[in-house]
Image (cartoon, rainbow, N blue to C red; front, side, top):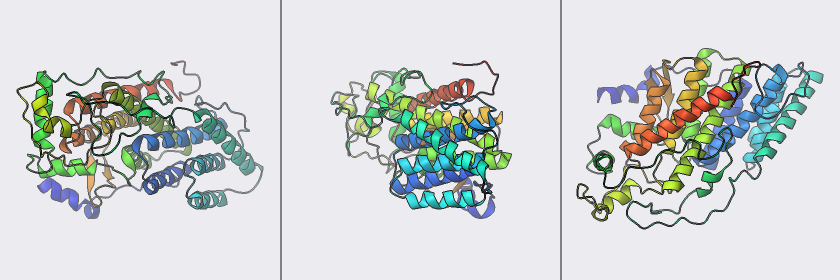
Length: 416
């Protein structure tokens, strides 16, 4: 309880480095997170938008500095062009395309950014280059499968996911073309435990007791953790939460514009692919959620599980299959990129939560935050531990893949 009280008053006592530190990259990142909140964007869609935004700004900036390998667009701009103007033009073009309902917000930020850049040929060249790069990357993501129509999946047998209480969501995301992975199933996990296994019984009993809305054995801290990482509709979403953490880390480190362009591109391409990987597993294995498993335990063929027809999870059950945890995959990928970029996992930082305003949590490592985010889904009653652990491991694998093979320094021959 003492820890909880410390967290609840942390806004007054714990100083958090400013997320925005005078950088056009983080300015447009913040604009994207606000658009995600306003539009109530789902996590996979948010991750795709953030990846497109930051891949575009990275190629725009890097095409001028030419210090690292491009993501997609080869440099065709003078090195004297304004990197700030290029990044702003790319950011505006992407967000105006992906979040077209509120163009005035992006125009305001764009005009403010350009007002701080001296007029002249360098500024004009940067603007033209940034718009060109964004157009190329947006075109490359056309018909990437994100808008495909996929038939409603069927279930019904014990262990099979049942769409309750809402219809299924985004089954096409299993088929979205990855940003970095060779294929959507490149990091597919091995699958959930069999219903007759000891592991399933352990997972079942844990989430039944810890994740219940009423009568749970959760501690007060565990309840706070579940809500802190919930990141539901109308928030910055799980990938957005990790972008906020990255802003804090970048501000603490004093990143340059070029460093932020690369960091946020790596981070968001890894999380976009983590979403694709997670949704591939979800619709491959079609495993039932705890709410269905607990209410129908009498039908699972396992005498070690007991049903409870009135059981409810603490957090509302999302409308898509259980295995694996998307939160865990996002978190594993993000923590790995941040660790690799800053060459250390042992970084002390604090982060807030849209879902639980007024609470601040402090961590001493990126991996600790990722593990807590993964465990939060068990405390919330919407994931079995196997799904959280396997999702985390898959995200870590994707994060290392992206860090090893993308946006490498010029001359680095380590390629995929």
